[in-house]
Image (cartoon, rainbow, N blue to C red; front, side):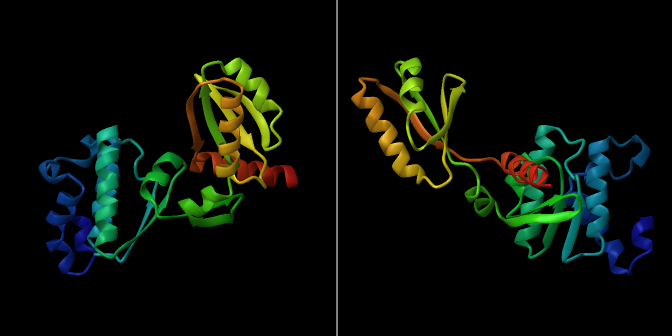
Length: 212
């Protein structure tokens, strides 16, 4: 109520709706000092909503939330966007950024070094393929000699192939499949592995450090 009192009169009428949006309606009469970290995060978002903003800037908003709370937060952000609001989210939790955001900017040493949609950032990643066969030891030897393969190694119960940057992944996958079958191996898995936002962040910032 103190925050609302410092704003325009209409802000007071938004208190109940703001608390409901962030799931704090049932705790509205409690003292903030008794709130958990996650609840305080929610309260910060509710406070921002009192101004009925077109732009919301949130810094590490899922910090302190349990998995259920994080899932609810994602839905809340999508709800804000559906209303026509813009949400700018700053976070080191790149898995959450990937699940929540439409557009991403990677900041390194105070500079925006890459930006675009999740799909655009992933498109610049090293192309990889996951393979599993009836005899992975033989498959490793065969694939290590493949001209399209930059690196090959174990990945759980299969093989992880990293392709050269100038190779078309679909064509490489077709040829890998053909060679393994001709060698008498049974294919149990053959699929592209999409690069995560975290992987792209590490690739981009590592490349910058090497260049420096």
